[in-house]
Length: 114
Image (cartoon, rainbow, N blue to C red):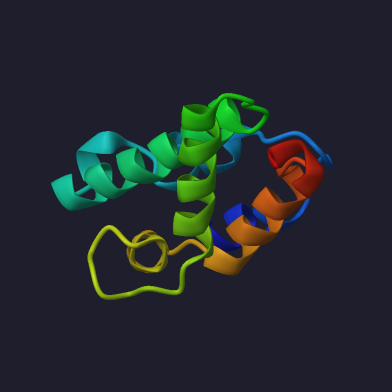
C-alpha cells in the first residue's frame, strides 16, 4: 500500500496541489486501527498541506509568511523532534522525497512569492 501512495505522490498533474494525495483513508484504512500518535501526525501533515494550498498565491505578508514557513517545514531534513516532516513520514511509511517532489511541482513560481 505504501508503494502505491509513493507512486501517486511522484506522479499526477502538474501545477495543482491535490490534498487527497495523502488522505488517511487511502493510506491507512480505518481510523480504529491507527494509534493516537499516528492520527496526530496525519493531522499535522494534512494541516501543512492545507496551509500550502490556502496560502500558495498569497500576496499579503501574513499569508506569504505562512506559506514560506510551511514550505521550509516540508524541505527541512530535521529529525530532532517528533513533529518534524522527516519523522512524520518515517512513522507513517511515506516517502518524504516523493512528497517534496510533488510539492515542488505544485509550488508557485518564485517570482509570484516575492
